Image (cartoon, rainbow, N blue to C red):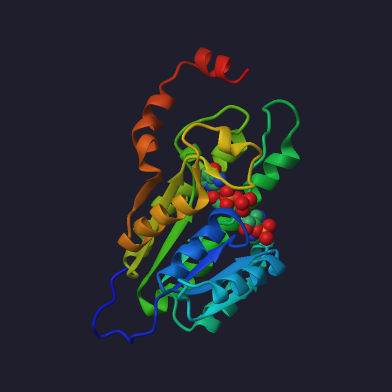
Length: 259
Ligand SMILES: NC(=O)c1ccc[n+]([C@@H]2O[C@H](COP(=O)([O-])OP(=O)(O)OC[C@H]3O[C@@H](n4cnc5c(N)ncnc54)[C@H](OP(=O)(O)O)[C@@H]3O)[C@@H](O)[C@H]2O)c1
């Protein structure tokens, strides 16, 4: 994000949902290193407090202000009022990262509706509520950048991940519409599509192809966010090139891979 010479010289501020673990936590560490002010949200306030203590005591971490918010994005009605408390505590906010999310295997035709509803509620409705709150905050100031952490699964249909794929495809598409709507308000929109990142989101995720560590992913994501990139596959190789090929795989081959 470039800062114009007329703007006040306070450090830029980023709000990250789902900052208590995994990618969100790694992003917080990455932006702290870069001297950004942080607004961190998640359900586990104790984990956020531990992260804040760690960031304040770490050499090389330059975040001058770290504000915390207990937030459950599944309570859609509370997302805007609670996030506005975090925005107010920070005063100015430059970027909101819509990262909170979950995953679970589910099978079509097996009555996994409760699991599928949970995935769609957090990853799609919770994310939309967060985007909405961020957009409403940014509109009067006529600037701001909103970034959603979707997934390569938004572009590639994966068996036993139908609800997860649908949630991420829905979110990516929502962001595409939001980009057009919000551009007239000076607000920019980015979508990040990670492949496999080693976190607690799924067991054994490190065994999946091209899995990368969360801090490596966060470094690449921070670059894309600061550049204001519209879409970023993380890591770029192989996912940027591989996703159309994976979509072209015949169903019979997917069936064999899924045994
Ligand atoms: N890891 C991957 O390979 C991968 C790949 C593509 C996309 N992604 C996406 O990246 C994002 C982060 O995933 P991750 O891998 O870092 O997972 P993770 O390690 O399990 O972390 C998920 C984060 O989301 C928060 N969260 C979950 N449900 C929430 C809710 N209802 N309200 C508020 N916060 C909630 C969790 O915090 P609390 O439990 O404290 O609330 C946690 O901080 C997700 O959107 C995921 O879909 C991950």
